[in-house]
Image (cartoon, rainbow, N blue to C red; front, side, top):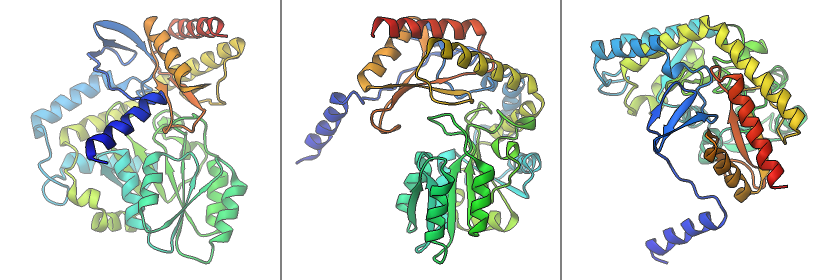
Length: 388
């Protein structure tokens, strides 16, 4: 088979299975709550900008100040000329806030998870990851020389069995998320840490969807459960309203990454102006309990009314509210039905989620109004009544 036939065949398979993905051009993101597409405004229920900080005036102003001081880019990796006082200030601020000796900045959450696995894990080591861990963790684990094993989602006994079977082999790394990106539920972090310590394993928590949103000052899932994993990953593309990521760890681990992480050594560092904006974002997160309260109000209201409608929701108390449809085609039909009525809610299908669990991943934000949520739920109910 030549290249063209191979590519066309694979694309046709996606189309036939209703798995075709297509990017759309968003013309304007008005206030994080609404977007404009094809000259029409939609109420946005697909954003990870949980606190609406992407449009915060003080953060925008901070980025502009950073641009005036540093220009648009870093000019190289942090090991050459790309590590500025803005980066150093942000790393220190993150470490102080979350109670770790060190923080290291990465260009994305995908990059930091990939780096952790590729830098730390060797042949004869074992990565024992929650079955629903993010694709970045699982893909890196498959590519690494270590052995990947996946324990049943949030099941402590399943994790215990894997750890006990591998206790006399190499290093053990247990990986999980704080809040799971597709199901919206939380990991039992206290229990996970207890069993990992029993077997002298390290615990990696990717708290992309918990940091900024829950806990005192938005310190996230680990603070809420009163644990301190050896490796804590936070990302800036959700509650921070920006992009990038950081690894929180101890001094020795940070120094090891600085010597061996190809992502740090060979990737251009994030623009210093972005680091200035992120420093302001941390400040806004720490002092904005009212935004977290508004978000929790919206979550509570959404779930209360959904129960009255008897919608097939997963058991999530986070900003991520998965509405399970199952069939790929019907899921796309529902997403389009909502779009016709002014709501932007993307369909999530395999391979992002397991076959037969296609869903709407409804995400709530602090600046949604209760009326927005009411109208969305009424429209969902209309679709289900029409398509029984």
